[in-house]
Image 1 (tube, rainbow, N blue to C red):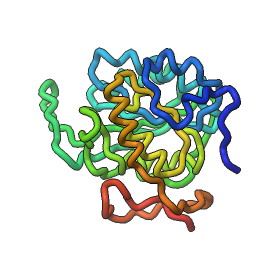
Image 2: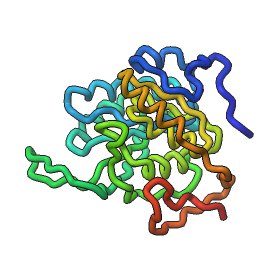
Image 3: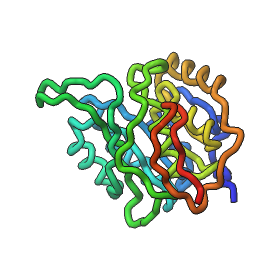
Length: 242
């Protein structure tokens, strides 16, 4: 059965890049109307407050079966977990191995070669992903073509594929260069995408205009994860049907 948009969802939010402050725009999203929140907040210390808000809004808009998946840098992981734990329950910490250049964290004298996509659920719920999932993903490296902090499509495609079904509704409150929206279009997911910067939103929208969905999508029931080497960073080996 295909997921339908909530009747009170604003039409202008449906499968479009909306420019504005997500903290204001998200107030119009109906309760329990989103299947997956997949987003990438900025990592510096001065933006940590956004995780407080992210946990609160995810707890409100997610369905009981839904997940929040958020990228986060490893330096402030403890602080991020403390903030999200106020509104959400921790599910798992998925690790992305950096296939590109590795930044040096001078304060800790560490060459960082990974980051996290951390999964959370609403409190007092017990949802499950739609297939077994790799805890370590070797992505195609960060993609800076559309945004300074852009992420690669392969990682987003893999986790969105595992945590949602065709025509589910995925929300990204800080869509940046449009990776989440592009992957949703490829995978036949509906999406809500907010971006505070007008110029960045225009770049993301232009990207979507050249993004093509898969012509054939396997049904998600009874999926089995088959780990194989990737042949393309934008089209990794998907979760396979039994």
